[in-house]
View 1 (cartoon, one colour):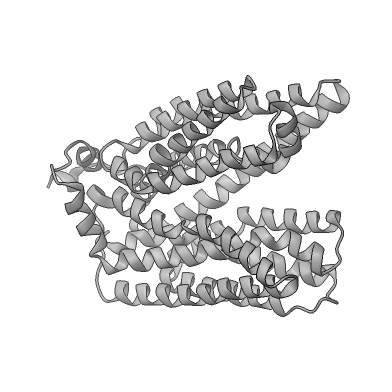
View 2 (tube, one colour):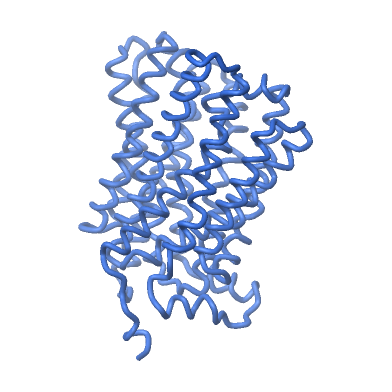
Amino acid sequence: MSGSASPELSTLDRYLRLAVLVLAAGAIYPLLYLRQNFEVTLLESFAITAGQLSRCYAILGVLFMLTYVPSGWLADRIAPRLLLSFSLALAGLLGAWFSSVPSFESLQLIFAGWGLATGLTFWAALIKATTMLAQRDEQGRFFGILEGGRGLVEAILASIAVGLFSYWTLSSGSSPGSALRGVIWLYTSCMLVLAPVVFFVVKPNREDDAREQQQVPATSLATDLKIVLCKAEVWLVAACILTGYQLFWATYSFSAYMQTHYGLTAVAVGWITVSKLWMRAVGPAVAGFAGDFFNLERLLAGLLLLASLALAGLVVLPATAGSVALLAIVLAIGILTYAVKGIYWATLASCGISNRVKGLAIGVISLIAYSPDVYLPLLNDALRGRFPGKLGYGIYFSLIAIMGALGALAAWRLGSKVAGKKIPA
């Protein structure tokens, strides 16, 4: 009775909270991956080698894998806004330390701290906050806006960072190291400003959600894990995200593949890949709204299948194909993979998991779904070493395309299970 009397947030309030989540998700990760735009300057300023920098990212990756499940467990026991605010503040403070250009030993501690701040206390809290904020028929659009919006935020921040770096080094006469510190402070300031904003704005969706966060039954982790792992829908969602994430991972190899096997210049390849990046602001939002008006799981199945076929099309595209044909197929793969990323977490609402263990479910699914971060680079290197040239890339892309097709079957099966039962709003 009290649950039905809990006041709902207005549409404007929910979208305002979503906007803050988008800003938080878009602001917290770019500093960790500063090497994407400033790797050479980073190496020179910190006086480290590429191997040492890779070691820092290995620490980050290992911590991500180790904290997925604990992150979900934590999100079930502490209000998401507290975890998100803490994450932004900690990542920002570590960024301030990072700006002082510390030693390599300190750099490893900073990356370890970032792994905890963005993995243990941020990821599951972000997903849980989003799924609790959206109503049952808004899951697709909320996750689509989250994915597309944070991509847009990252693109805008990166553009500002590169513009400021260029101005400081070319017009103001600053050294690259000094300009890099300015860029670091740009990202750091955004996180530190957003930390209190998230705390005060991202409040629980319903009063009963707040009570549920505060009154968690004294059940063991083993008991909660059994509840999560015994639901077939959880495994199907994990399969959808795993295969969708693999399709996204394949796009990381496009640059070298096009330059090596299609004779394009680095500039031409750069324009094609940058064009693909802007699809991230379009694909997720469009797929999200479409998923709310049509069957979400069947739409995901169709997108996974189309993305797999498009990737297979890149494998069979002849070497004589021009840049226009390459641009068309790369953009198609880009918008489809981003669309998949935009809605695959929205399927979590179809599992019928209570908010009490939803964070744990997110952690378990993430552990399975994001494992390609570990094995796909090894698989890619092994195939290219065993089958040099276009053949190695072809096998790699084909395997991922086949897995994508299996993911489409998993999404279709999930849709059939959802259609066979009623999920309460």
